[in-house]
Length: 288
Image (cartoon, rainbow, N blue to C red; front, side, top):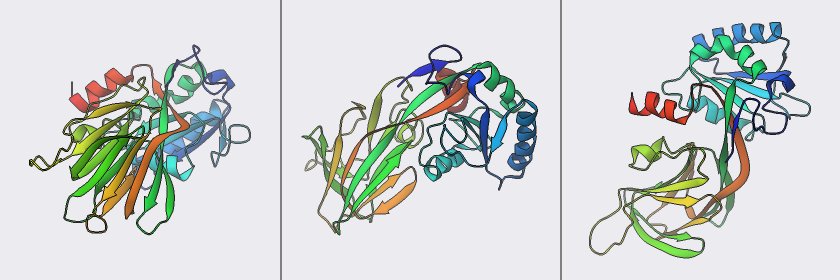
């Protein structure tokens, strides 16, 4: 992962404000306050000399930066809708927590921030999930936040967990969360896993309610895995103990074998200078 700050280290010409001229605004228009703010934002951008484009497109012929107005859920929706866009994203929070977003107080300063480059840019990985289903079908999915492997029925799931081809654990319980650093403060944190700094190139694996009875040896702790490694989960006792795969909240039933690894895709999130990882963690998670 890389960390860029203003005119310092940059990702090509995408992070330098003076090179930005075309902007795409994506807003959760189902929220009245968000829709109203969108109109004011686009007017400010035009007055600042920016061209507004309707769809992200590519950096070459479409937007050079995306402004996303909504909550973390809307951000996830936009990432999947536009196939994890290459453009940097400046999000403004109109949701509840908005861990990946800037506060609404930044809205009036967006033009100045983009033009001056007075921000930091966090680069986040996207996970690729190769899934084999019970009927033999193959599915490929992607996740920015996390991958959930959970029981599909009332009975616990049982599967073998492999790390780089080596059997790591024979597990019985409710399942696992595999999270990126970006997603580590969501379900993973609620399940007892750690919050991971975005500069750490890792994914964290956290068990969900592992069985502790003597016949089982289910892992009971979280595991941080280098991003360039492969995790494989092979379901056992099928179809009796069905397994559901959920990638960024998108469910897929009937998984029998799931591989999770780095996709090499990257998402760049722009943050105001006072909205670094420590500040956001303190304000929005710890409550300090």
